[in-house]
Length: 408
Image (cartoon, rainbow, N blue to C red; front, side, top):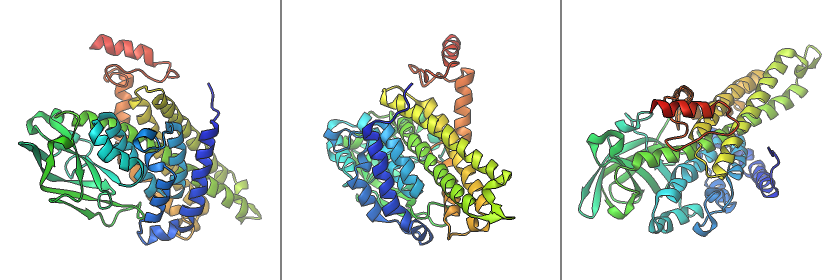
């Protein structure tokens, strides 16, 4: 078992860390308070190849591995969650779904400019009545000759009002539940497509969140991704990719809270000594250390499986659940370490606290991930799908796989 990073991985880590220190953190608090999306940072991310980091070079990407993506997401969210969210939706949910399911023409027309950072992309799955229950979606796509007519709406869509491309999911067979969902590439400039920003969010103020509306939008049949009825499969695959970046980014939140808390605890004095000498403060620091290292190990396990081409739905789910909960806890503890200063926007700690709350909900709530883990363990759900397996360090997995097969 080798935990050493390669020279390329170290270089990526150091490059993105420097970018965050120079381009993101100096303005992070101000941009957050002003609800300002810094497009200059996004341009810088594109120049570094982060908007196509795991997309093959022949399709305009950087051709790096998933360890590099994880390290990059950690550094980016150490600075600002809004920009890691962009990697999630643009790379994880949208581009990697196109890489797997789109045809050659779709890849050339849409994936390549996305991987180069020339066009931004989003992922249109969630609706007012369809979050965890994807099959409850109301958006429809009716076939009319050589086109589909799209009607409906999506909400809580990151970068809805900024993206030029959207991977939109709609019912082509409304009576078939999840088997009636199909996926389409939609250009947000098309007639009938509109968007609106979501106001008054708890966090991620420096990002873009909004709604998409479709009114008799004509989508050419050639923009159907995969087959009719394959949309649920595509969406679940995309979520595996997006959840991975969420988990990796959460490690950045924990690390930021840990580093800031350690520095403050060594400088701030009460009762004649640094507060880091007080055991209750040490307890909080220790909890952050545990949260960071366990989350990082789970993320790297998932990255290793992804780089081997092994399905990792269970492992990615576990990483996302644990890392996002650990990030929220770390931010809570960091405020406590900083006291009143942690509650103030001046120090920027409360920004991590607010931003860490949403990832516990999106791309699968903690409760959904707990259910997935329990059903895998009980044998009610096949390990990583019909033909899947589990990480080799999960010693219990082979016995459960046999048990699940016997029940089938």
